[in-house]
Image (cartoon, rainbow, N blue to C red; front, side, top):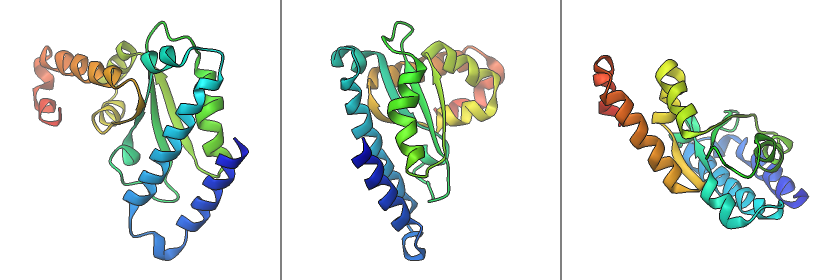
Length: 168
């Protein structure tokens, strides 16, 4: 883990240089790779890897979801998991968030099931925007697809939200 943190720290330092600030997509791509590597290391916890991949996913949200991450922007994440996930939020915090924070990044995250994420989105426009801007990083792509299907169904069933369908 120290090697990953050291590498992320060095890359972050390099990205702060003026000639590196022109391409926010490059910064996002670097964080994507780091998140995939950190997610793959979850196999070191005492849970079957297939179970981890079935029951959890990392989604990039906000600026990061739009691939517009700057060197001082927060990394915003949604850890989507099933209600029967064999691990708690602390696993996400310890194994994914902390290494990024140790490398100097500001990480903002939310852990939610699909139903919780949809409920939050329907009650909070900022959260809804984050979900609509989200993109899959690693884990169960099925969870992300299910989130989008349920969110679309909920918006379709509420006539006051018809204009939002454009973004889905």
